Image 1 (cartoon, rainbow, N blue to C red):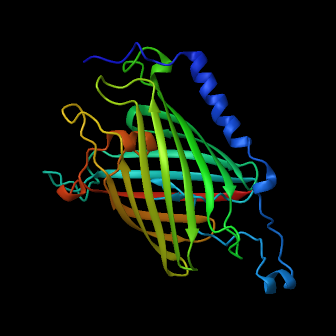
Image 2: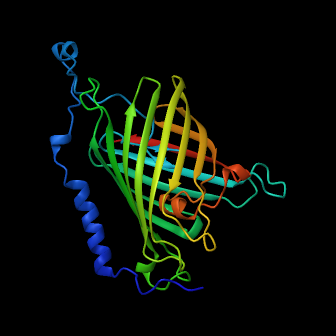
Image 3: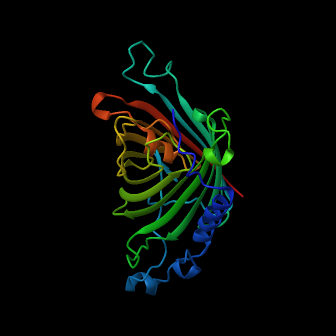
Length: 301
């Protein structure tokens, strides 16, 4: 199998891209920030309540994607993401329990109410990732700012040396702009355009990929909600080499305040966003679906 080695990014380019990404995160000033203080009676009557809307999403994770939400400052978050095997296996595997599965565990920490850093490790491909999240805008209760906007990015490395000998060849990147609106106390929806890049992939496969995610949450009780998700890769691939399918997922979410539990069915199994976007070949119409769950635990310091 041939590989695109001659176009691999060099270490200086890697450092430059990382610095540029970090600069992008911190280049926004506090002019975008909205006050979290209590609104005065006069502000409430005049419709100028500048406080952010309360909890457009219960968690920073929604099925296979991120949301605009960040925990409050100085919060440590532990996340477990698990994907069982496909349900349409030929052998009895108890709803995918006995089939090959994938799992990711990670920690996130909010430096401020608007900046979060995280790390994680994933079983498949032995991926190690560094991620970051920045809340650019927050929807206000008065509606003066109608949407929330958050930037999410990550760098992942495949640590298997037998895949590519050079460490720079095993790096990949993901960048996403998440735009969300809380329409009512029960309904929140977000759309998220994204761009992912792999330093090296199999020949004839595009290393840069543009995608779009549409996600939503509908509360059906105080601590219970229905979740949905659709992801699509706009970058065309040679179908003789790689068949890329969109993702469709549906699930339930239960929250206890410091814990959030999500269980769902969908087609994505790679967990790390750029790998889901490029390498998903599971077709929902062919019943290539699997059961997954996310569990988050928060500690505030």
